[in-house]
Image (tube, rainbow over the protein chains, first blue to last red):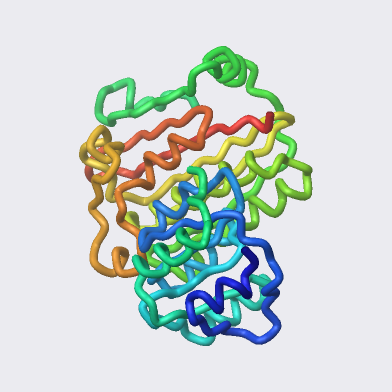
Length: 115
Length: 174
């Protein structure tokens, strides 16, 4: 699956225009707790989360994130969007819940990130 | 990671961990006290979640330039970031000291208190004393110290209630 397929599937909105949506998405992880997300040290992963503060973008400085999907209609503030853009990290928002997003992506064949 | 005088006098408690297979290497490192190749230092202000994490990012970038393997880099970054957040979230501020040696990194965090009353409890996955502000940001899962341990080859935590806390870890590059 590439990112643009995922945006369609989740009826998402890409939060800055130049985001690279041709990226291959090998696996995903979903959580609202930062320490949980930091368990993903073994491979690059997509992150689904309801957290929208700047520390979520900072996570991508520590582990390798392919992109971040903000669920439940959440949208970060502009300075957080700018941080993602500086890093070339695609960020997407969707009105779907974390559970629904996970179910849709899992059904479409996206596996869980190894932890 | 020498035991400080206060620990010897039993005023402070210590948690110490060495990963399986690294006992000899860690002992060798502590006895040999090799010369450092690079040293980095960062201040970590209390409750400043705009700055918190920058030190770990700088450290990761420097090690990347030195050619450290990407999986090892992520382990170092995660351990360091968790510790940096701990200092910002739970202490009155502190300093992060990173020392790079030929085949490993030593990172030490020293804060200005208020200290950890029960270290064993603090090491328990899921246990957290994070306040509402910290939890709102997505911290406070109670996995910070366990994540540091999981990613380290050796770790030491020395503290007491009403005192400063010193956390150190070692991670080998290969």
